Image (tube, rainbow, N blue to C red; front, side, top):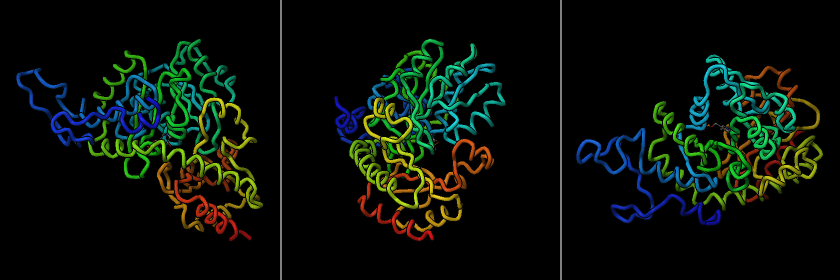
Length: 382
Ligand SMILES: *Cc1c(COP(=O)(O)O)cnc(C)c1O
């Protein structure tokens, strides 16, 4: 099946009890057994729930993977994955990493004796140089947040294979509509389902998809042991959201292209970070491994007055000032004071997060209204 058909049908069967075309919300914690151990595959909802099973199958199908696992949040899915490791193991990750992942690695798991190294992964040679005999996991995120750097997944997969470690890819920004890391050789793909997959800013959830049976079995064991599983109502909402994933992503990509091209010509704008622009440093890699470039855009203003950024951020009326991304509505945010505020200023500037950097999650509204909104906000600058 092709993507659009899978988005609507994968994992979903008419309900065996009633024929309901939509998978019901199985709001139950437990399941009656005929005799001890004689049951229909369901014993307790932390371990298995039919609504979650449907969603896990759907997500696996969309990522061209064999096994899907859902978690209460994106962070819970990464947390569970790190539990594959043991003290002394090492992880090589990207220096432009989602802030919550950076915090989990450095403030939680470093304390359990796992070592994390952060390099600029947009050049695979930096990754190769950081590998040691103890490296068990390469953890990539592409496009990265908020600088929209592109990491060559196939190149990292070749390194991981040669080195005998796993490659995991956070595919939240691209979604399976634009990019399939497993097809490029990754071992694990992760999603903050909260974002584009759910798509309506009404759920927090995470997911992992893998091909390897033994790895899936270990992850399912950890999922059940740690217990950060999502409830059936949230699974239902995501199943509903997935049915329009292809339509939404197509429009996010079109609107993203129009907004990025417009921003690149604006006299008050300094730099635009969007992998679809031919001038983007990793445009060639992006064009090779992605089927489109999505709706996430960052840009900086000319001059470096934080007050100018604040003015634009507060002056937009259609773009809402909020954390998160990937919903149908457009959002904008300010990494320096919001998502990346915990990084000291010098360190922030060193990794390229200017005080005037603004991040857009371009929604699926009429694109002219989005451009008009940015235009009036930028016009307020002196
Ligand atoms: C939001 C996000 C996460 C964390 O997911 P939650 O659902 O918020 O726990 C991880 N990675 C990326 C790229 C994200 O945008």
